[in-house]
Image (tube, rainbow, N blue to C red; front, top):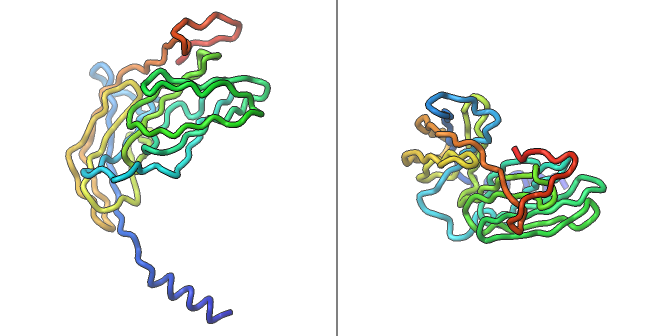
Length: 228
């Protein structure tokens, strides 16, 4: 038994280690010529590889956007192309719907907390605006990217993306409804942290006013709130 354990340790010790580095940097968010807080503006960064992967990098990965308290949580998420997103309903006794009008348009139907969870595999690299056909205040933004190197920018504007394979990349800064900003090319090497130049994102106010999936306005009802 001890010999087997020793042999396993030796094998693990000789196993090849995948080389990796990291990317770090700072984002400044600007609105109408003035610097504004990063916190609350859903700012994310991701690395765009110089050479796109031969297949969707998110295949086999799963993310959750929960329906709870008549809201989607998280409101904003960035996922790799090919990933599956689940939309579990955690509101007991409440029916929710999941749909988006962005092409390819999709209506995942209505579900209660006891029904099977709605899921969708996102194969198109773009931004999706997700809503509920029943509750106007429910909204989410899903950005699908050709990368697994994704990070949320902290309240001070800093970010670090670890475990990056050596290669050439560009940092992309994104927030919902805003035009993404792309950095110059940078090179990642094994065991090193590459520092990207400071990037400035011109923030556009979040757009989440919408109609129902058939294009009609939502009917007023007690407790209805504005979308955002």
